[in-house]
Amino acid sequence: MPLSQAVCVCLLLLAELPASLHRCVFDEVQARVRVVRAVQRSPIGPPGHTRTLQTPTGQVVSPSFTSPQPIRIKSWLSRESEHLSEPDKGQMMATVKEAVRMVSSLLSGANLLSTRAHTNRKTNIFFIVQRASSPLLLRRDINKYCKFLWKNSSTINYNRCGRANSNYRTETCLHVTIPDEHLAGCEVLPAADSTRRIVLRPHGTGLPDVDFLLYVHIQATDKCRAEPSLLAYAAHCQMDTRGRPLAGVVVICRDRLTKLTVPTVLHELFHVLGFSKDLFHTWTDCSFQQVGAGCSPRSKVTYSDGSGQMRIYTPSVILALQKHLAAVDPELGGPLENLDVPRGAVSSHWEARVLQGSIMLAVLDHSSPVHIDPVTLAAFQDTGWYTVNMSKAQSLVWGKGEGAMFGSMSTCQDNSSSFFCTGSGLGCHYLHLHKGECQNDPLMDGCRIYKALSNGSECWIKENQRKSPEEIFGLDSRCFFSSLTSLNQRQLLVTGRCYRHRCTGPNSYQIQVVDADWLDCPAGSSIQIRGYQGSVFCPDERLCLYSDATPPSQAENVTGFISRGQNNDLNGFSVLHFACSAHGPVAVTTLCCLSAAVCLMVVLRVAYRRCSPHCGVRIHAASGDV
Ligand SMILES: *[C@@H]1O[C@H](CO)[C@@H](O)[C@H](O)[C@H]1NC(C)=O
Ligand SMILES: *[C@@H]1O[C@H](CO)[C@@H](O)[C@H](O)[C@H]1NC(C)=O
Ligand SMILES: *[C@@H]1O[C@H](CO)[C@@H](O)[C@H](O)[C@H]1NC(C)=O
Ligand SMILES: *[C@@H]1O[C@H](CO)[C@@H](O)[C@H](O)[C@H]1NC(C)=O
Ligand SMILES: [Zn+2]
Image (tube, rainbow, N blue to C red):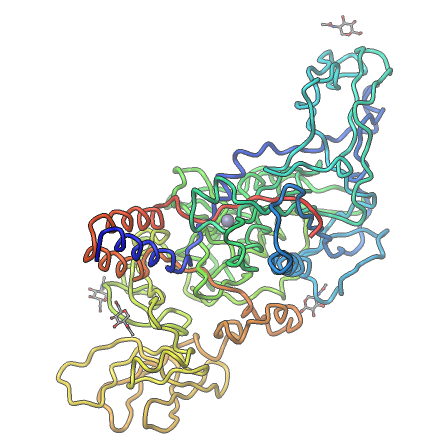
């Protein structure tokens, strides 16, 4: 094969590789965004402070509380978004809307005045604690429209704008220009001690019945181009006086529109709503809240534990993790990802060793399901801005009941937990939907886990059958550690095999192997089967216990999540995969080596990019009515 052809084949192969690994770039994006925060002009105070000059009334909050109300999130397609065909646009909008709908069904807030709860209360997960009664108006950045502020504190115009910046155009949220109608006006006070004012821009009309404005921006940005696996990124850009984010943008990479999933958008939305290291310090404590009394800022929520792991120490998070791990250790704050984070600094993601399967991991793996887990929901509860219906949490199978030390670097290699492995043998992914191989992972800090194999390892896909006559594939098949063999073999090798299963009760099931009857498989034990050598191990607390640990095909209908409410059914979520360990790039490399050295170099470059800590998904937000 001529060199040029070889290169072509190689590039094609690369293009076909599943981009299942998405590393979130939120922290990096958010760090470059200037967030505009509303300032509280106290109605009582020194002269000059009484006059509310520019109060965007949208954020005046009623001091009295009733029950929380469902959060109202408005998505707005940015005017700068690249043109989309109608089907593309429809699909993208459906994805964003579904993510927004799911959040609305999770978070909620309170305002006695509003009777317009447009969502069924029962379906809601998020409620907003303080719902503004007036239309949402975003602020203009005084540092942008103003050349200087009056700095004499005994004058009435203290800290107000003295001169207009003639270069001022408008406000932006990442790549999005905020429409004037969404913005409060601004004015200049030409004299320090005079009430005379010049209106620079009038107030916009604002957005009625909106608690959070999500700009959706579709573009092949430089960031998208630089990160081949990046699907979307986001940032928040405005917050109210209490530090609650009011507006943000999610940027969706134009050329990866078709790969966009609801979990990806949901993940970004969670960041801009408050799960962000830049917002941890503005989370508020409302536990002593009474009518008329406010909440107090938590100021600092992240601390290092004894081992150097940074954790979020807030009451609901601690409680949720203690409950999940069945431990009472008070050191059990929500562990934060340490990869690529300087010592002592924090990230906006959970530690993957401890909370595998959570929607808020730094890398989303689309090969297995991700869940809206109780610890993530507890974090939103602890923001003080939201009330969360915790009964909507999806189950977290990973680490359930494993104790306080679960997932620590010191214990993950000592064979004390069946969630981790040593060596590089074959076995089963922890959800038992896929066969897996014991592997390392960049996020795992040296701990090894059974990762789903990339080549036909799904037990629940019937089409995988042809490769293996000793197994049974199909919707009701699961992966089992097994050394079964029908041949007379001297050495029995334990590996992951697909057999059928059927539930007989919680954590109780039967299995069926080739040419055999259904047999009870008592959880936690191993069984032998007539006609076979070796045995099958029956996993404990993994099968027939969680309705949301089922094949994605049964969860295609994402909307089923909410309507099936009490099932806690998370099946609709796509799972994130750790692609760097996938066999794909290796196979491609081999192929290319045979063809041409040039090809190898290309592959290595791509493989490096895919696997380097910098590869991944980044997040932003955009505008335009979706
Ligand atoms: C919380 O969710 C549960 C289960 O879906 C539902 O029964 C309950 O009514 C919800 N509570 C609120 C306050 O919406
Ligand atoms: C500040 O303003 C007060 C009242 O107008 C004036 O008396 C005082 O001299 C000013 N101080 C400075 C440092 O300009
Ligand atoms: C854990 O188990 C593996 C396989 O059984 C064994 O090779 C390894 O030495 C064990 N490690 C420890 C620390 O016990
Ligand atoms: C899949 O990959 C594993 C590990 O490389 C290999 O052992 C196995 O034979 C492959 N399975 C199929 C069906 O190709
Ligand atoms: Zn993220």
